[in-house]
Length: 479
Image (cartoon, rainbow, N blue to C red; front, side, top):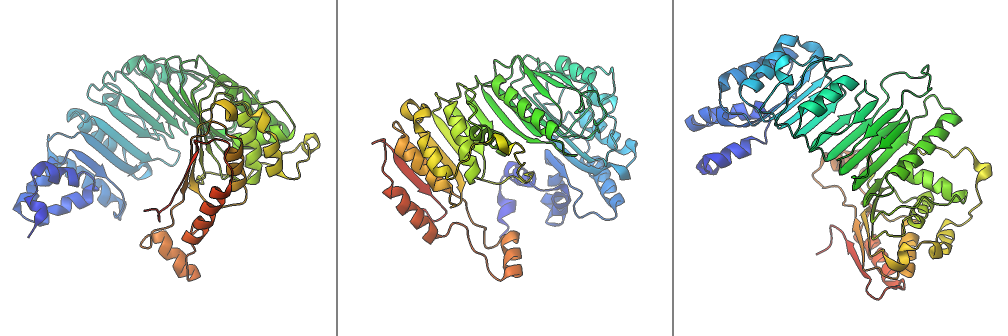
């Protein structure tokens, strides 16, 4: 019995919306009912995977769109290697999207450093609600009218200051704006009235070594209405924040750009990072990446007083290596109102080796980091009055984690919840699991039941300063 065919048509269409179009179209061979069903799918995803030679993919996209006619499309996502395409093809697709009033449009064009120019119909569109563009170059002085657009993502694209201003004026309902590895701008005033979330990921794509600033033009960001601000990527040029008093949630996950390496370049990058931290000292929730904690650790070694903030929640994306403990202590010293501390030990794919501290002569010697951390409890005011929740995710047992947990339990007088979520091992049917077993003959899980039992026993043996402190250890083996 074909149970799928017995489902109501809206459910069938919803299932098909999760598949690439090459599989959706193949359903025509099932039965007469399915021959027409695929043309009613409102969420289309054209993936280049499985097409060779590449001309077959172009022909497939064109034929599929023609066969659909004017049937409603809510979401259209198209992948493309632009160096194998003429403009008339992608212009036809965009024109088709505009004619059919597509609401969510994703044009993921892999351009190999060649930028494509959006056609006129894309600049003036009254149906788009979500727009994501890869590798495009906005035409200067082109008027933009996106009256219904709420989400905009630009990846690997050229965006001049003038075009950015056109977006701010021409998209009055914009709520979310993302710039990922784009260039051409240095003055970003996010003043669209409804804009609440901004993500900027910086990567150096132009050689600024001969620039008068020696590290590129200063990037100035103003966000008077923004509530959530995320700054990530490579800090290859100085970044200045202005009018960010409305920001409630902020992320600083920069990494230093030191190619070619020069000590003075690393020095101004550290200073700039601390300046950004001061500009965001008022936010309620702050997320910091690995390099931020490294810089705080170096300041702690030099006995530099911490920067004071009013953050109530801090999230740290770190591995919890021994040096990280110094950075955490420096952060806690400067966060007297902190109520929640979250530590995510999951490694990120873009991480680079730790940057050496080149001024060792200024450092104080710390023979035992764990003992030093314990000795700083009296300077960590949040432990006495505010810190109630500590959560460690993607936990993997290593020598620096449990000393920190012991410090929190022994010194946290108002602690209520200590939650540790162990990292899950690989699924036995996953490709990564099979690859490791094939190469090494076995797979050793990082958090085995035996090791987690020892962790639980260690946690239960630690005395607690707070009578209300509850310890929770979760893993894939938890019932």
